[in-house]
Image (cartoon, rainbow, N blue to C red; front, side):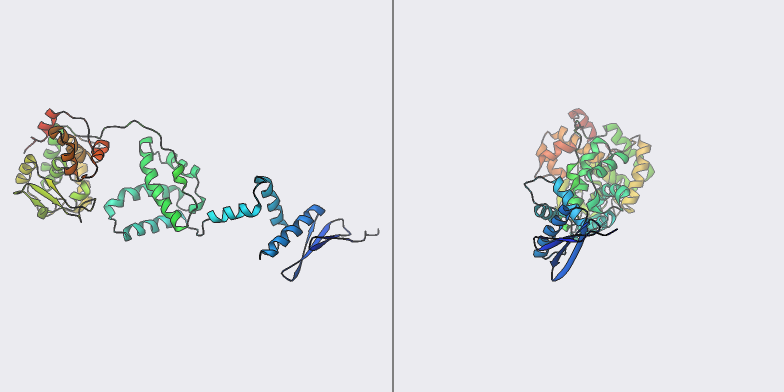
Length: 371
């Protein structure tokens, strides 16, 4: 059987040959080199010549058939008023220029935080939240993590509605940092919807429970009575208590000095030593550190005291919340209570996070607890 003769069609800056097999071979000079591609339809061959010419004019290698088919598919996806070049530019401007898995990003993130002078105590809660994310997504590259991935972690980890906001805040800070570093193009955590929940009053202990706590501490480990005394009756944060020692106490002048190197806010402050706290410290004086053995020993002692006193489980920040609530009920002076807590510039913090509704009569009983 005689094969059909090839026919040549001039098109643009190239030619299209109808081959003896019924296919169309497009040829064009690109960067002083003759390039060829074969297509089943002449329309495809013409489009290839068009795109190859444009690519050559812009210093890009010639497009192969796969690239061409992708370009056709993209053209069908995007609105007609946008060109392929515009879409490509939009994408490239948002494409992360670095790839990093979540585990490595977390390590770098906290190294950055420490380099800024932040303390381990300040970062402990954030680290715990971020590690819950790493537990599920640690080996994924950051730019591949989607909103669905984040929501699935919330579901799998059993993070309740009341906690989603806090987790979202710590995860969002990590992703914002990653975005600035060029690891991701967008912060998907910002799209997480935190369920609306009714606000709850902070947990407090009753005067009777406070006395039971101090009684249990005196029997279990008397060296820790100052820790519970300063927490319950002066409202000093547990992390700050772990850094205090006997030199911070001036009983004659009636205050505890929390220096900037010990304060969470890095601002020095004097905390008033209440009369009943003074009596407890007179009976159980501070021997060196307020937390003998450090924060780990303090947590272990707190767990034992919690069970022995009946305040179990131990509510988070319950001593500071109790002090704030009873102090405000006793003095009826929000600015004074906020000052004692170290919230000099934000009295609303007192009402948002610390104050529970207690009676003035209960407040009198609370600050009358003595050995």
